[in-house]
View: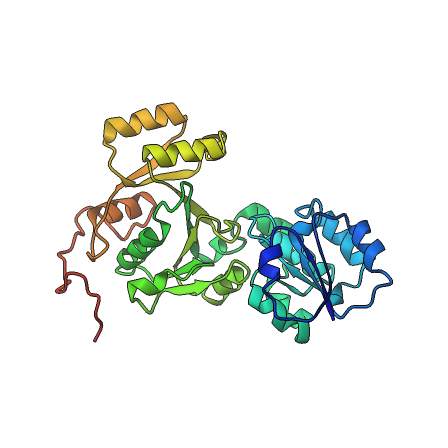
Length: 331
């Protein structure tokens, strides 16, 4: 029989088809769990990480590893950047915490098939602190550019832009594109596009480090820690900008010195200058609406040149070779 300690993911954990002897919900200190379960027999504890007070402080997990038998605990991670960072995951492994996942389906599997160190060794970074500070670890030393494309305003177009960048980059560079924690790439009918999870992204990059460029579609929530550089997308519509500012008034302060791209933008040059003045930020590129059915866009090429991809130049435009308008049906 198993126990569930839940908080944010209470309803999700309630869908698990497993034997439950006890279930508690709320936020708890480690000492609370120790007092409740020290003399309580159970097979596995499924722990929603958000049920731990101060769970983003690695010291809280260290206290858990010292106070309880973590081999009997399966931790369901949340989607925060801190928890999914290589440094945090590596620290869990250093404490002997091997059974962690963001996938609810994997929880049931781990009950009967607990991880060993071998299963999680790919996340263990003995020099984790150095990797976190350097932004992408040793990838840049290998000549590999790992470029994350992240939405700042909701659904700002990271998936389509990643796809368009990959198509055009592939003309001059050895490039891969991968989306994180989503499955939207399938709608482009391009078998070279890949999908992975936040947890598996570092391993995916390491496995494919022989290419020149990896484009990472981070969507709205993906962690930037595995990337050597990040492009931040803002769709400059009035409603989306107002929602963004109401959610966090310090958004543009946090984006200072970052690569801000206005995506699906109808702003002209004067409008962009007004945007920069009001937001106290610098726009790296103003990307208009693009037809994703086309193979080549001069705007994408100009953007890539600005990013330093020197094999492109202003005279390398190519005619469209798509004979089909929508290319929906594949032979």
